[in-house]
Structure formats: C-alpha cells, structure tokens
Length: 191
Image (tube, rainbow, N blue to C red):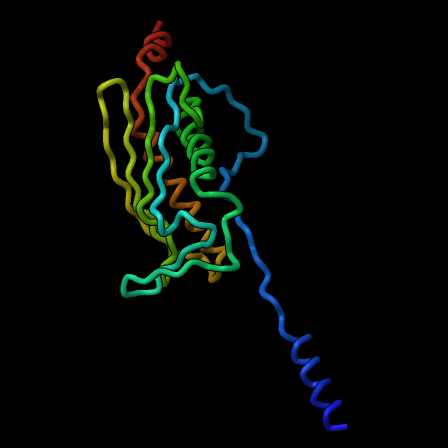
C-alpha cells in the first residue's frame, strides 16, 4: 500500500509540474487605421542591416548586470531580427518621411540606408537601444548615432517588446529626419 501511495504521489507531482509556454513576438510597424496616402518614389532603399551577435538570436535579451546578458528561452522573436528590422524600418521611415523607402535596393536606387544595431536589450527598469546608421548617395556618406532608453510601462516580456518597438520607431524617425531632400520634387511644387 505504501508503494502505491508513493507512486501516486510521484505521478501527481509529475502531472502538476507545468511546462513553460513559449511566447513569440513579431516586430511590425503599426499601421494607422483608415489611413491612405500616396508615397512619392524617393529612390531610397534599405541596404545593410547588421545586428550585434549577442542579440542576433531568437531569444529576447536581458542585461543582468556586471556586463552579463541572458537570452530568454521561452520569449522569442518570431523571425530573425535582420528580416524583421528591414521590413520595420522601411515601413516606419516611409511613414515618417512621407517617401517610399524600399526594403531592398535595386538598380534605380539613388540613396542607401545602412543600419547597425549594437545594443537592443532589456535592463532592470527598461530597454536600451544603441544604433548607427549611414546614408550613402553616390560618393557622399552621412553617418549618425542613436542611443536612448525607454522605461517599461509594466513588468514582463510584453512590456519589454513594446519598449523596444518604441525605441526602434524613434530610431526610424531620426533616420527619416536625416534623409536627403529630393530637390526635384520640391522645385516641381514651387511651379
């Protein structure tokens, strides 16, 4: 009888342990409902998107202090960040600049945007983004740096992803502000 009680206890303990649920997160630009506007073809395209190796993985990353980071095992990006960031930046920069920014360069591309994400992770009270971008037009290259923190509005990975999206949107707006002005479009409107 004692053996049966021990087996039942072990069985109940095994059944009561829960396996963690894996959550996946998409990085997408948030469309504005009911909006429709014509974007002018800018001849500008996203080119190289680089992500620091420590965040170029599926798990969301947290800095734990003393230069240590930890990647989450059950809170993952739904697709590689380089893929998500290319689409995200093309859409966000297009919306902020009111110009059509292509996700990929083509033969007709006049200016290229390169982005390098050096830091994108959670900290004790928020999220951190450190990034660099350059805009190349022919032989001219403009280089820029971005570094900001965003406080979490609540606790948990959902809040971390939301804070990282806010930071990435701010970066996209900064990139849009640094784009070259298309003088042909401006002079045509002065008519």
